[in-house]
Length: 125
Image 1 (cartoon, rainbow, N blue to C red):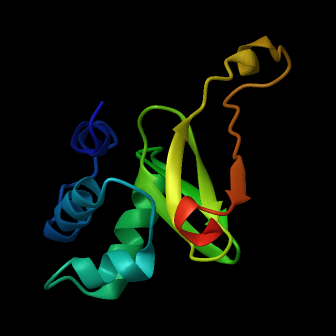
Image 2: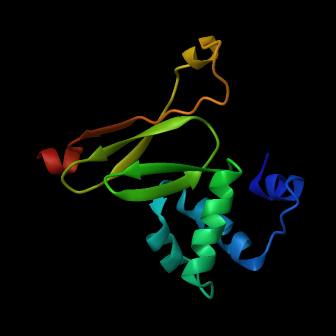
């Protein structure tokens, strides 16, 4: 289900700022901070970018990762994790193949986060 469909289903309008944030997230195709995203979105004030991201996260349309002390956002879709270079901050996604979460009988709506760190090839030379 697309973010537009999720918004409509929840009775939320697809405003110009929300559409702009969504398009910027699609173009970026990875994890990004709200500050960097706000710089990519032209003619939309920073507060609107933050509000849109918070709404998308609340609706489950974007994933939020906290890396260090910073919140990073990416479009929700296939389950994945991130590996980050400790030296330069380069980030790559890798798929989450763990389907064991369905075995928990006393929990629902289970979420998890896994962030790995290491040195990218460029920094390890």
